[in-house]
Amino acid sequence: MTVRELKEELDLMVGIPFNLQRLHFLDQGILMDDATLKFYDVIPGAVISLCIWHYDGWTELVLAAVEGDPSKMSCLGISEDTFYRTANSQHFKGEQWRQWTAQRAFVALYISAHRGHVDAVQYLLELGANCLAKSPLGRTPLHVVAAMGRTDCIQPLLEHGASIHDRDLKSDTPVTIARRLKRGNFERKMFLLYWMIKSGTRDPDLVGRKALEKSSPGVTTQKSSKLIF
Image 1 (cartoon, rainbow, N blue to C red):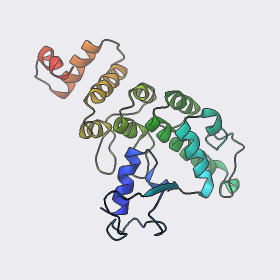
Image 2: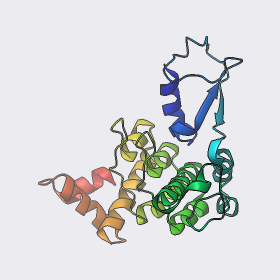
Image 3: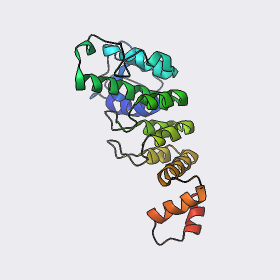
C-alpha cells in the first residue's frame, strides 16, 4: 500500500479530507504520498500519526469541526461576513474570498457530518455550506456519513440537495460505500429517505413502489417492494 492509498482510506475512516492530512512515522518526517509503507519500514502493529497541515488556519477549524462546536467554527472563516483572516486570506477579495470561505464551510460540514454532529451539520447547511461540493477525492459529506453509518445526518443533507448517486474518483457512491462496509440498515434508510424527499411523500410504502417502478420497470410493485423494504 502506498501512503496516498492509506490517506484515501483515512479520508473515509477519520473524516479528514485527504489534502489536509500529514502522516508521520517514528523519525521519518512527513510520509510522501508516492512511497509505499514498506519503504518506511512500517510493520503490522506500528503506529502512524495523523496531523493536520498548520497553514491557513486549517488545524483550528478541523478541531472545532471534530468537536461539533458551531460557536467555534463561526469564528474561523466559514462565512463571507467573517472577520477571521489568515496571512493568506487577508489579500482575498470578491470571488476569491467567496471561494475561500466556501471551501472552509465545506470542510467543516464534511468533518461534522462524519462525526455525527447533527446540530452542527444543520447549522452549517443553514449558513450556506454546500453539501454538493466535493473533496479532492470527489467525495461529498454524504459519502463519509455513509462510511460511518451516521443515520441522524442523512435527512438534513438530503433535504439540502445531497444525492445518493454522486460518485467519487473511484466511482463509489454513498450507497456503494455503505454496502461495501456492510451497513445494510443505513443503506435502506438512506435510500428510503432519498425517495421520500424526492417524491414529496411521507408514505414509505408508496415511496418503495415508486422507486421500484423507476428502477425495475415490468416488475410487480407489491413483490418488489417486499424485497427491498
